[in-house]
Length: 420
Image (cartoon, rainbow, N blue to C red; front, side, top):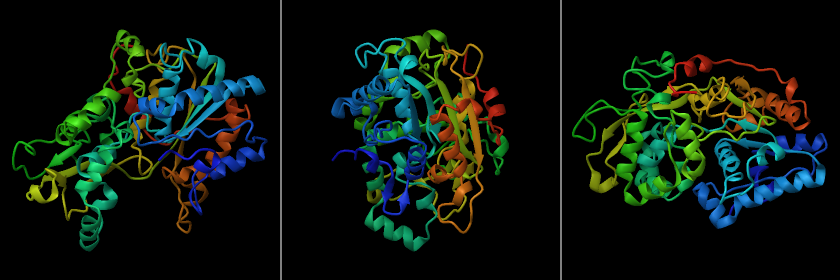
């Protein structure tokens, strides 16, 4: 089984449920066609290094970009959504690296006009941990008892967790930066949004300790270690070989990571290419409650469920909500601000970064939220977002005015990313 290719891989998920279709139609309206527009669909199940190993994915993308410059004389605008933003970042590292894309220093500056990051998951998303740990998320936890019983009989938590652990691409969505981004046990950058008085730095929380498995709350770093320990050696091995979730606090560390492909999906460990002529646009939604922490409990019938822990049952507040777009936590977009730090070790080319936040203002009579939704997927149909993408694609990105609705900028100022 392989990822679908061409426009049909991106326009609709199923009949009537659009994904990229509105953006594709609008690009066609301003003159783009199959000769000047391409879809780079990827198999999200695979680790990024295996996208190239199995499918030659990044080689094909490189050739497509080079062909575009040769045929049109124009650089390429790379537009991505969600996990795709991490794939693009990996590509920008891969394409210039010796022994990989072999494009050499300057390839990105020569070939890429702009990178549009739509609701990107560049620093991961908290819900990825619990999906891999216990096969759960808010949507399954908040089902009624009868629905939970039916779901467990049909496709249990253990089966869901085991399935996801066999898709290494999912692990790329694990949160990056550890406690410096997501908080310590006593404080987190976004604590002002906490409603229960407990710091968001406590990501996995236990109210009823029963053993060493549940005798303390876990920070984000602790939770990833906990997951890797619980998931078994096979999962841990492939994650360790494919990804890194840390933070490079010195310029020397960042420079050393130029040769470590595990860091190429983590903008806190690998720098943007030295491409001063390229531009970055961060477009994302705010104002929709998003999963930020979880209350867990030890599972007593371990032999039956095959899981040591599970999100607390019967508690509507077992999933702790924070700020975001319903899927991606607001903190995930922190790099959009920190790339703008003067002399940042993560942005050696001083690439300009423009940020537009979009408030979630759904139409209650539209099942997809209407023209002003900022929900993670439905934002692709938002009128404002489509207009922004068209401006960049038509060479008028400089006319875009920044719009900030959230306190994220002030939250990022308190993050310790080490030396510039």
